[in-house]
Amino acid sequence: MAKKLYFGSNLKMYKTVAQTVSYLQKLEANTNDISKEEIQLFIIPSYTTLESACKAIDHNNIMLGAQNMCWEDEGQFTGEISPVMLKEVGVDLVMIGHSERRHVFMENDYDENKKVLASLRHGFTTLLCIGETMQEKEYGISKEILRQQLIIGLHDVQDSDLSKVWVAYEPVWSIGVNGIPASADYAQEMHVVIKECLEELFPGQSSQIPVLYGGSVNPTNASELIVQPAIDGLFTGRAAWDADKFDALIRQAMEAYKSA
Ligand code: PGA
Image (spheres, rainbow, N blue to C red):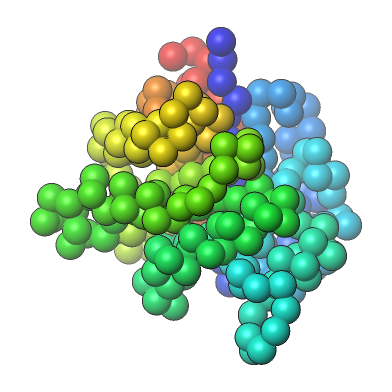
């Protein structure tokens, strides 16, 4: 049976409110004819755009996510945004542990675990991002790092929450303007490691969790990535920030998947 494919983008610290709304409306219109049984679309814009973004589109077409979240509902946490606040504006999804949160803002796996549990407690679809650095890859410990990020990050997650858990594998060395895209073979190999670890953590239940690849996804590598059996979707940054180009990438990947 054909699996559902996931396509989404983190807009990082780009796009104003007006730019985000117009991007979302264009993407929604562009992808209108694609069956949402076949694909799940999601966009993760910046905090200040979320309220307008949530009103601008039908969430059955495109889920909307936040790029980060505090684990507490309220309190003395200056500069943080709580799950209650995200609920209030109508967010569907929360991304936890993006590479830039871990490596620019020094979050660790225990922080990510607190956020994952808080996000699930509030009923958000929870996208946990994991990935090894270049140094960890060179030392040959990628698999151990990914396993650690999953085992700690998903600690205490219950089977009943798994329908809301997504994982993105984004090797740190592959992300952004200086990133080197992972080869399809390498991505597949790491996705197998991730899926095996998820099965160890949640025996008999792990197939519910989609595992997406991210890191310099572009029109040149999208097709070879999406046809890998352990890759369930593409989490795209720069190549998705123009609605026409993202729509074209999605269609190209769907075509490649169907004809594989
Ligand atoms: P990129 O970003 O596609 O621009 O490399 C990926 C990400 O950070 O999720």
